[in-house]
Image (cartoon, rainbow, N blue to C red; front, side, top):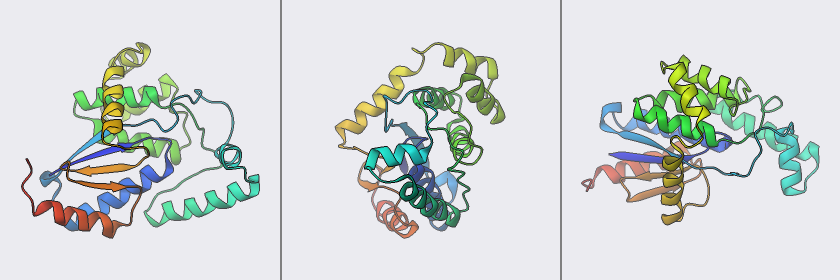
Length: 214
């Protein structure tokens, strides 16, 4: 079985959705029975590297709500994350562009480290509140999961490297009608949009397992 996941590191529901899928997989199958592939998806490709604005400010401006309303919404989001064992330090998070993080993930895929890197990037952004558009930060994150730091730096410093892979994933998403993240596709037959409850993932996994993968 193959599960393709279109997600973005600055999408708070993508990390939660990732954990819910993992929870379903623990109840469904052993890891070697399921192949997971991360696909690039930028929610806001025009975002600057870091404007200095908080997540509260951005949510407030985007939806025309007060700062207090935004903080309340984020407090509820932190509670959702906590239910999955995740720590979101939203007050400290640095919203930023994720194109380079996605390019690095594509490179990680080529050396068999994309699973580890994706997890560490989510953790670094939401829990450690690191700036995941900064090249030195990204290289350190890559190194922490066993990737070569110098090679990672070389990829990051050349904006053309793995850019086509990122764009290809995004083009495929468009062809499949994917307009938001997270989005999960199982064997190109079953689709799950959003960070659905673990039970929804488990049901889809069971249905997909009853059909041969073509």
